[in-house]
Figure (cartoon, rainbow over the protein chains, first blue to last red):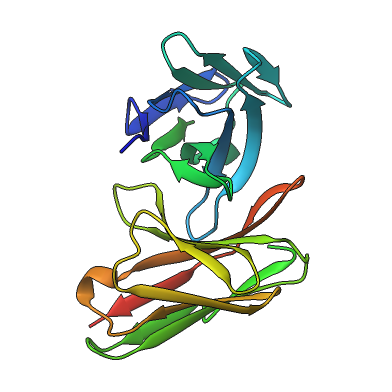
Length: 112
Length: 111
């Protein structure tokens, strides 16, 4: 079936640098995408979302880019901080009950 | 997380026994979901509900059943637990207008 996947399972960055986490999706009918952050022992926490009629959306220190031509999604975190260390998931929304389909996740580690 | 609670938080059970996990919400959201999370995988959808007594299967529904007799409660039952069902289970709620909120998870170990 169609799914959402991530390019890299792990990412290490120096504190203060920018981080980029990538995601590829296959469902061309997906019209809504969400990035989640998950810390150890906790549930996924909403970071930012984007609809398919947009190319870019910015939040506080985070930016999501959507390239529908190549079905690619990215999350950019500016000035990465130690508190950003976590697993990041992209998810797409589909179905009559708007179910989330998750990618496998990227472990972000911020180095001092 | 505010408005959604899962119980129990941790459970160890023996193979072959029935297990029920509970998700309770105070937000009056229409949609509720059960996911499981295993190492190396993102969250995978088990079952979901779009109203009282209205439920449907997700990607990994085999061995699981659900019930929703009232808006605030969504129960996930493992009829006869197996070791492959050892996992962390997350409940989520959604009203579509307000996005999705996840519970803190239930860590289930089947021995």
